[in-house]
Image (cartoon, rainbow, N blue to C red):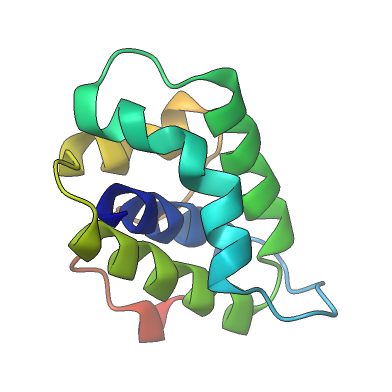
Length: 116
């Protein structure tokens, strides 16, 4: 579960670069749903599965407001703390591997309160 949370956090960070547009608040359940297929990749490496990258892109689109991006960040950080075996370097590179560009580093040490 920690890997899933880390993934969710990473994806949230990806979403922080988008213009606010969402009308419904993002939940940790949604973050987990979009990023769950990334856990094995984050633990073992290789290539992220298509479902993982689709989830990363979807989450990036869903996190349209500052609040949503901060929520996603926190959800991913919580997941990273609870799922064992997550490789932080793989997590940091996941957005790029999935074709998502973000202007900040994906990391468990990211201050989610500063995510915009």
